Image (cartoon, rainbow, N blue to C red; front, side):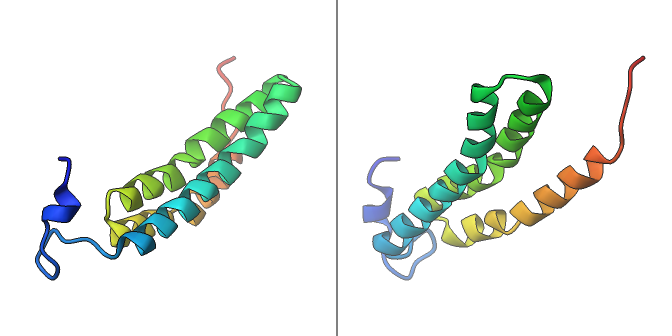
Length: 106
C-alpha cells in the first residue's frame, strides 16, 4: 500500500533499510537486468535468424532473475533481492547444461 515505508517504525518488523541504499541496490540490479537482456535482443533485432532468436529468448528468460531481484529491492526487501540475485550464476550453469542435450521431435 501507499505510504508503507513511512508508516513502518524503525527497528520493528516490516521496516526497511535506508531508502538511499535500497534505491542504489534497485538501480544496480536494474542495470544488471538491462545488461543481461539487451545484448541478445540487440543481436536478434539486427539479424532475426533462428539461432539468434533462440539465444534472445533464452537470454530474456535468464534475465528474469536480475529483474525479480531489482523488483524485490525496489519494494524494500534488500536481503531477498541479494538472495535472488545470487541465483543468476546457477541460471547460467543450468542453461549450459540443458543446451548440451539436443532434443529432436523428428
